Image: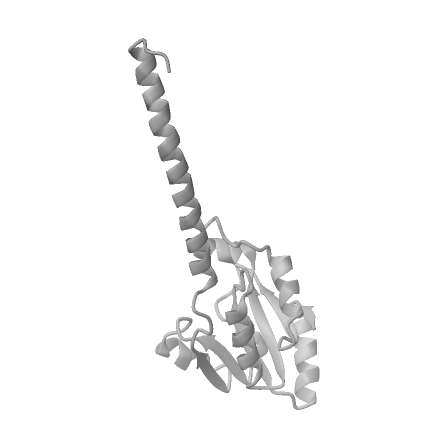
Length: 183
């Protein structure tokens, strides 16, 4: 398992194709890797011999999902994915990379995506660069984004409850002081 770059990618692909290996490509953020990611990557690998995973850079995720993302830095996300048995190679996708550049560079035998990734029109376009496109359903009950929202909502609720009781107490103290009463 290795991290590929623009220099090593064509070399590795050439060697794999010379050996007749079927190459599968999938892509994503893979922020806070969870069971759904593991299941998804295992299923993706089942379509071929070699699984390459394109991983969005920190800048790309921030651009798409906001300044509070990613939670896990790109180097850790890349490394974490290399520990999964289904993943053979990972490739960092930079923000400024042209659209579909990794798909065009890999020309996978199978491109695997979730149903929310590409419209039917985009899938038709992508078939120019790959033999087959497989669309998978989500494989976990919640996404990383949903889990982060739940954490944020829970923290906001706790802060709100704590501030509310402290604020009321502080207001009562100030009013008592203004009235010349001591508490």
